[in-house]
Every structure is written in structure tokens, then in C-alpha cells.
Length: 531
Ligand code: SF4
Ligand code: SF4
Ligand code: FES
Image 1: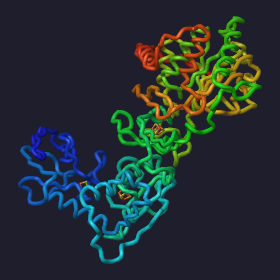
Image 2: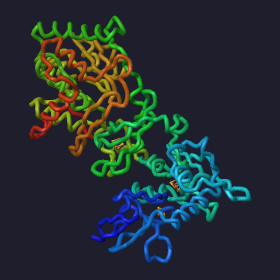
Image 3: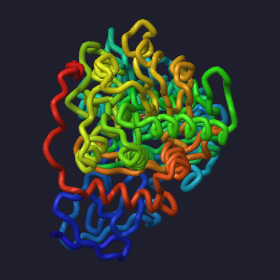
């Protein structure tokens, strides 16, 4: 492994490591525009030039690889002069419209200008005008005047999605990024180009002009769009999610996430159930809703019918919520469990609407915690059947009532369906969920749980990797985490609750999940076929 010095600091790296990465290892940041660790390196922007002893001229640190005995300077006068010159060149025709640019506050060009240049333009002629606010695709807008032609967006479409929509057009100072004729930037990952764009040339149609980035708070989270569970940053302002950005995770999503997952930023706010509801009464305070649920559950159990209560689990729920509900149900006397999540068709590929998965990140299962639910079911020794089986079991009177955990999707909302009608006739339906839907009017008691953005919870993705989504803001309305409702129900029904706080509960759920995975779940004849 070559040993070299960077600004006097010794570092040993694998052969082939670019200087820009070697510098990171000794805490030296080299500025760049066109470099990205997962893309090819055209070394075109020249922002990363550094001084290498014995080299006749400055070398691009993104392209030059480490060599034994190399002596590198990244902050010498010569390097700083080169950086200023590159910035002056890049800003020559730039409109400097930062006050109305959505990238302001997170723009590499703006930051580097203040760090290195901060000089007046010496241009005496008119700036070259280029296309503004050009809709380059359904999710992305292009501004040609702000583009520094780093080609990261072009290379992303060539090398990561392999969809090849973009190219450079024209020459010299007229060069622009455009889709090929008859094409648009419409792959399933198109908004990754917005993340990659170091300036305000590519902006997201969903996010632009919604919120200045310096007002955003950032929370580590995961995408709940499919069982891949991409690691994300959830960015929010005053209790509202504004956008998701991919959080680098080499084991799961590398640097990327899909557009479908990003579009879920409204989900925590849509049709929220903000109060407990009692059928025939309407919205009630938290304690009244709880008391009504306790009263009905107690009467049901006292009548010796606990084993007739179906419990419907959601693979949208966190491990802690599912652990709490299964544990509660078993202590209560429940014998039959069902699962109700989003269907595989919750979204399909943009250009292949008959496909529910691709060979990159998007998987068919559109629920973030199916693995966690299955593992908990194994560990508790319960069989989990599909929601379709619930209709059949209600029909055959194996169960006649239901407790439904519906983080996002309530059960089949078609009022003509057998399931709906059976539940309408049921003696007891308790709904613990996030959304106010017609289903809320069917349940005898609906208890509002908060969205994943308002509570901490862990989820296990399709590859068995456990991740934690942190709470971004306070629960909305009278909602609270599902496990909190279960805690209160458990205590009021004398079913016990040994956990002092969330950390205790998390540890208990983890201990349960660590149980050795047993056989696959019993095959369910009524389960819908995979599309
Ligand atoms: S649009 Fe952005 S990412 Fe694409 S070449 Fe221009 S500056 Fe680079
Ligand atoms: S691939 Fe799945 S988890 Fe990742 S961003 Fe898309 S929907 Fe979300
Ligand atoms: S980052 Fe090295 S030349 Fe662009």
C-alpha cells in the first residue's frame, strides 16, 4: 500500500485510491464539482487541482491516484490561485441569481465563492443567456445559466440507471445539458440528479420554492415506500415533512433513492386521524377514547370471546409497535392473526407500468417491515394469515371481531366487499391507525397513532438489515405512538407492562427478534398472487 504525505500528514492507502479520497482520510477537504465516488472521473471542472511534488503542473486530485512517497499540497498559494481562477471562469456567465435560486444555502458554487474567491466579476461584455426553468423531466427543472457542466447528471443516467436520457449539446460557452430528442428525464431515480447537481441547475419540482433550506431540520430516517428501506434524511419545517434525501448506506441504497419513495413526503400529513373517534359519538378526548376501547375489550373478554377477536398486523408498523400488539393480543387471549399491508402495486415503474420492481433498488413488497413482522411472528410462535383470509374466517365464524393496526392502509375500503360487510356486522372493531378514512366510521373505537415521522421505531428490510427511524417532530393532534396506546390498554386491562420507557421496549423487541429464525410462515391459500 503506497505511503504518501498530504499537507505534511502521512497516510497509507490502497493503490488506485484517488488523492481526493486519500486527503479525506487525514481530514483534508479538497473542493470539487465533477467528482463523485460512484461515477467515472472526467476531471473536467479542475476545481480539485493540487500541487504534487516534482509534477510539472497542478494535478486533478479526483483523477490522480496515490503513489509511494508522493508529497501533496492542497492549500499552497499556487493551488489557491488556481481555485480562484476556476471559480472566476465558472462564474463568468453565471447569472448570480442566488436570492431567487432554490439551491442557495446548499450550493457548492456559492460556498466555494465565499471561501476562495469573493471577487467582483471582471467581465465587460454581456453574459451568455441560456434556457431558464426548463422542465427537463416530470420531476426535475433545468436552469442552463446556473449549470457548471460537471456532467454528473449525464453520467448518472449513463452509469447508474443506464437509461441514457441526457447529453451535452452545443459547444463552448453555449453548451447545455438536454435530454436526447424525443426523450425526457423520466427514469424512476430522476431526482438523484438533483442531489448530484452541485448548483441550482437541477431542482426538484416537488420541493422548489417550498422552503429555504436553512429553515429545514434534518432527522435520520428510512423510506417506508418498499421493503428495501432506503436510508434517508427526513427534512422538515414546523412539523411538516418537506423532502427526503438519500442517506449514504453502502449496504442498502448506496447514495440513491427512487422518486416514488421521495413522493411519500406528504404521506405523514394526508387524511390524518387526529382524535380518537367513537362510533355514533364522534371525536372525543384521548382518555375517553381509551376508556371506551377498554370497556369494550373488557366486556368482550369477560364474555369468554377473546379467541374470537382477530388481530390485524401491519408490515408498515415498526418492530416495537408490532411487538407490543402481538404481546398484548396473546395475553388477551387472541388466537388468530392477519396481515394487511400495501399491495405490490402501490406504485409501479414509471415507464413499465406492469412492473412492480426493478433490478436496482425498488422491490415488489411495498412495506418497510414485512421481515420484522415475520420474524416477530416466528419468535412469538404465531401464524399470520392474509387480510383476504380474514373475510373467509369472519364468514365461517372462526373470528367475529377485529383489532386492526393500520399504520397507513386500512383494510379493503370497498363498501360492497364481503370483508367490509362482515366487519360492519362485527360486535367489536377497534382501529389503531394514522389515517381518517371511511373505515374510521366503521370501527366502534378508532385510536389515532402517529406516523413514522413522529416516533422512533426500528424496521428490518428485505435483506434482514435492521434500521432505526428517529422521531422528527412531535405527534400531531392527539395521536401517539401505537405502542403507547397498547401500553395504556395493557395496563387498564391488567395485562401487565414491564417496560419503563421506549428504550426498555426496544430492547425487549430486539431480544425477541434475535431468536433464531425458524421455518417459513405457514402457506396461506388466500394470499394474493405476486404481481
Ligand atoms: S445540470 Fe447540474 S449536475 Fe448536470 S451538468 Fe449541470 S451542474 Fe452538473
Ligand atoms: S427503493 Fe423503496 S425504499 Fe428505496 S426510496 Fe424507493 S420506495 Fe423507498
Ligand atoms: S473534481 Fe477533479 S476535475 Fe472536477
